[in-house]
Length: 408
Image (cartoon, rainbow, N blue to C red):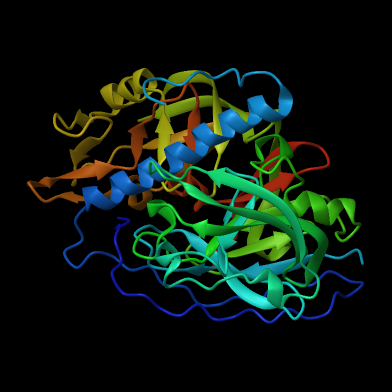
């Protein structure tokens, strides 16, 4: 069973990056722990906050896609609106969800920041030195303290689930992750953070987006694409292990210690989100849905689908909708259903402990499912599924690869 809410803040160990080496280097594993609410029940307030934040992120991406490309994204909203490679250990901070954070450094001299590596967005956003009290508790990026900072004198605004959003100004600076440095990287220094990024709901300092440029609020190259353009990687590929052991982001290829067997590769539908075709959504051994689109999003916890799709899945696996909480479903805690996805002809299950996110306090025999209804016409596949596979993002060939996590 995966339990949601942690209430104790722990320090994120800083990752000290070594100089790039000609041969591939692997990140060192940092022991990880995941914390839960004391009674192992579901906190719906925290769930709703995360849903609002990630929904706003996806909708912001739709808007940015249209602004940057000049055409609407095809999936409608349902409802309201040196060559090298490097491994970076990720830390599970208690920000109300089991999301993985890692340390990056920015500027000259470099300063460290804990960020969420997010394949569902494309920009780096951090608290700026002039941010108001909405940034309290986070590390601040001060462009005036960096000799390599360039002020672009361009404002930005990004929405993260609240009416005010985050806003600030854009800069260019050196950004280093796992020893690999993008020397001309655009980033945003916020003067105000939205509720979804404030310290009580978001344990990291900021975001590092890893989707495509068409989703960028800044209209600029995302960090990894900048690394590739500047010739800093062995391969135009990055990969994640988001499992309970040895979690890491690997830049410039894949880490063979983290997976077994071959990859199953699936082409990206369009260069915006990391959006691929899901052959089948499978429930209790039955192909419930066929050929649906799915956004692979390391910044989201849930798996979300169009309301009619999610209703069809739970009808097969025995889920019951919450009358007072639209989009949520429950099932008996002693009979967790079997659910998974088929990508590229290969079936990958969602572990029972990931599908079950805790019991309902008002009905302790019922547990809440991690698959919920969204408001857009595509599936969003978050860490509920992704923490059970090794996943690679191939920028050069515009595809996503799925492999079996190595046994510990």
